[in-house]
Structures are given as structure tokens and as C-alpha cells.
Amino acid sequence: MSLPRDLLAQAQLLATKEPRRPKGASLRRAVSTAYYALFHLLTDEASRFLISGSNRDSLRNLVARGFTHSEMGRTAKAFLSGYGGLTQHIRNIISEPSEYPDELDAVAAAFYDLQRARHTADYDLSARLTRDETLTLVRLAETAFADWEKIRTHEAARIFLVALLMNDRWKRQ
Image 1 (cartoon, one colour):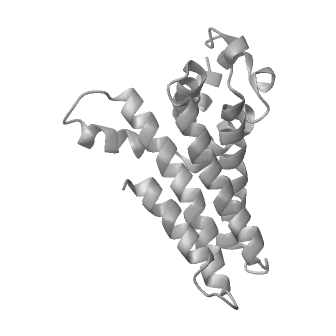
Image 2 (image 1 turned 180 degrees about the vertical axis):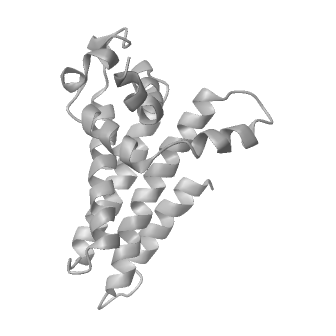
Image 3 (image 1 turned 90 degrees about the vertical axis):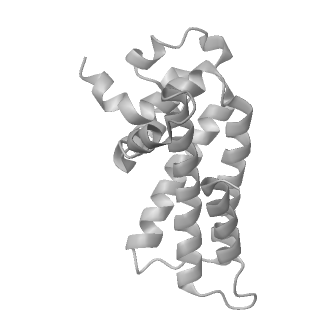
């Protein structure tokens, strides 16, 4: 199993760990882990897309370290409203806007929602999480994994991957 899939399984385990009265710490860690599962899936996919070839893991790991949560969140927010919501600089590089996959909106929305939920789980100690809310967020990550698998080789999905790393820099041009 890959790290992202291991993290997704860990999130599910944490969300269901205590059968009767879940501990807040377990629920908070489940939400955070679900986010990191999707984060690592996308950074791994992007690194593999950007750095091809065998025996390139060291370079891929360096590229993966270049992603920032804040830029990824801003980029996901830009993509979650579909092709029409994208800035002109990104629309200009998508050659087939009519083939823009709906699943990309769903992956972007899941990333954005999970990132916000992780911030709440990790930093807002007054927030009370329920098992149902937590399981909904874990399922959101699972659905994003499935949606990503459907579109991972699509041109718009690959542009999304690069934008997760470069979008702020593209805006400066």
C-alpha cells in the first residue's frame, strides 16, 4: 500500500476506533489524517508527473517538498467551481475546455473542504466533532481518491497538479 492509501485507512480506523464514545482526539486525528491522505496523493501524483523515469525518487521527494498547503488550498478553491471559475491564465492552457471533467471539481472541492476541516480539527479546540461528521469527511477523501483515479491522466487534471505547485507564480506573469 502507498502512503496516501495507508493514511486513508488510518483515518477510517481512527474514526471508528472507540465503538461507543469516540474520543475527541481520535476524531480530530481522523480528520487531519484524511486531509493528509489526499494531500500526499496529489503531491505524489504531481511529483511523478513532473519528474519521470526510474530511480528518480530523491528528486521527486525534493519536488514534493516544494508544495505548500496555502498555495494548494488557493488553487483548489480556484478549481472547485469548474472551468468557468478558473483564471484566464489557466483557461488559456487547457486545450479542450469541453472535456473538462466534473470529477476535477469534486477533487478540488474535497481538498479545499478537507483542508478547512483539518484546520478546525487541529487548531480550534472549542470545536466539537461528531463521529458522523468525521466519517463524512473520511468518505469525502475516499471519494476524492476514486474520482482522481478516473481523471488522473486527463489534461486538465495534470494542469491542476502543476497549478498546485506553480499557480501563484503563474499569476505574476
